[in-house]
Image (tube, rainbow, N blue to C red; front, side):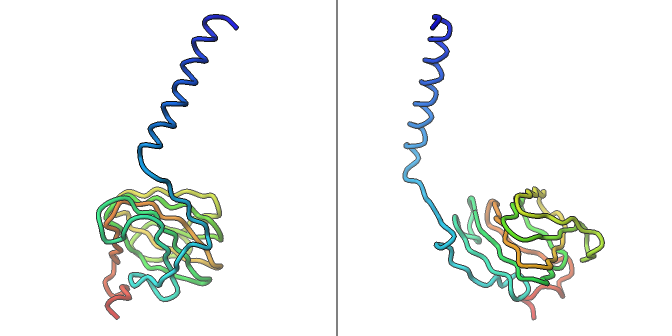
Length: 156
């Protein structure tokens, strides 16, 4: 091994060791399996939508990781959220469109593995044909504001 290669190897190994040390300094890690999830109704969505919060609290400042399960034939009218929304589809297909009114003809089908990143207050709507689950990563507090207040299930 040349001295240059030995020096690069030493730097690489040192970087790996340092990275491991930094991770250990952040405290214990968390592993959540699908069986650990506790599903609950979402008052801010039409009946049938469920949420399982993995990390954080939806109504408090800070990072939030949650899973949302939408039933088959679900429709979520146009709405928006206060912060950047990161969505990763885990199962099923979610059809999403941008705008002020739900229009199934103006949507994009997102299957498993698809990632969607939306800026704050991006008006959008969703519908499904089959049950679908997605992971939501946001910074709280996370709220849902409907474009048309009459669509808000909390007011019915």
